[in-house]
Image (cartoon, rainbow, N blue to C red; front, top):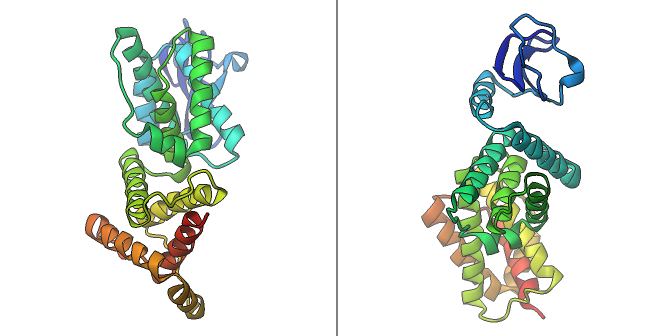
Length: 276
């Protein structure tokens, strides 16, 4: 491959065999080089291939001013997340997470505190991603000698979840708020009855996470199993009344009608989580 453009001493632009624009990173990769020069493949540490030209352009603008050691640790964190989760992660995370971590480090260096208002919720709803966020903080401290606050583990987790679900950050925050409010409604319907240490509570949280995702993506569960729905209505009327409050809340805040099937599944989960 040949250099088509030089971003800085460590980052250059080239084209792959499919004529897609790629961003190549490596220490000294662009030092004293010129467009048209053959790229020293031994120096290439990371190749970025974005989905579209707009994303590639944004990435180029961002990495131009970020120290290479921060780019390297962000790559390490993202690879660790991919290896740990074994899920598809949107490549946009190379932009969003790298930009966030760079800004977080700058805030620490300037002595500007920043709290995450959803720390508890993120720890509870996205625990696996939160553990990755904690590991990321340790990696940053070990490699860059910068200590980020624990709140940043939750921010990093959100970026990872966002890349998993392929949603933008605004939708991600809205999903977290929605999940939080549904739990509040259930707690108001059944005060002090939710067993938050039980496996059923963990399953309920997981269900709510994907339920919120389905609402924002418009991909809800539907079924013609009217017999199942009738059984639930007859057995768990008190829980169904609680779900009706959830349905009204979602209609009023999201202008969205949840399906009967979704209501039945919520009812079953609530029944399990309040039964000790």
